[in-house]
Image 1 (cartoon, one colour):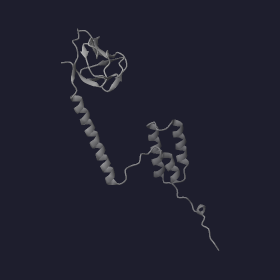
Image 2 (tube, helix red, strand yellow):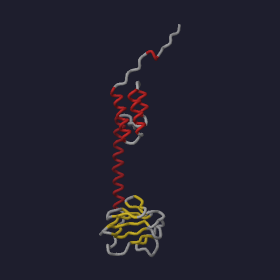
Image 3 (cartoon, rainbow, N blue to C red):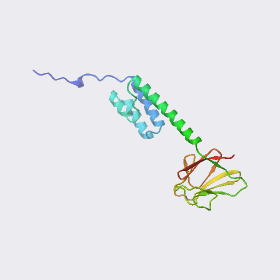
Image 4 (cartoon, rainbow, N blue to C red):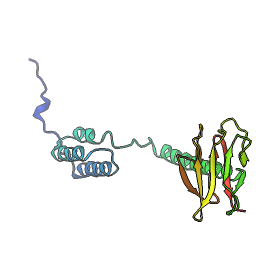
Length: 186
């Protein structure tokens, strides 16, 4: 006589309220962070409330939860390395920013400062990434305006590419092609 074991005859352990609450919190946070649409959020909430097993809940948050590093010490080491990397990156940015040559803002009553490779420009830059007539810096209505004049390799202010004109101030980092400067009023 052979006996068969019937798994369906035994009841599935009931989910705890804590397990279900954890999933509901993860779903709310995922929706708030824009990781899913409102319709997906509503559908997953309904499925979480109707779930009977832990694996049904796990599927609902699998794409939302970032895996934590294994082990207590591993997590601490990863956290420490991440913080040290952030500090060293900040120091590197600060060091590079301070080493930039100064570009003096022209006299407010003077003519516009034309920048480019062409010898007729007020500020002539000889780098091959600078266009012949690259940009112009002028004082209008009490503000300094930097205008990109259709350069090939672009003009940047504080790391962002300029298309057209932008207001600049002393202390801003400006770039023309690969050349970078720190604007200075003195």
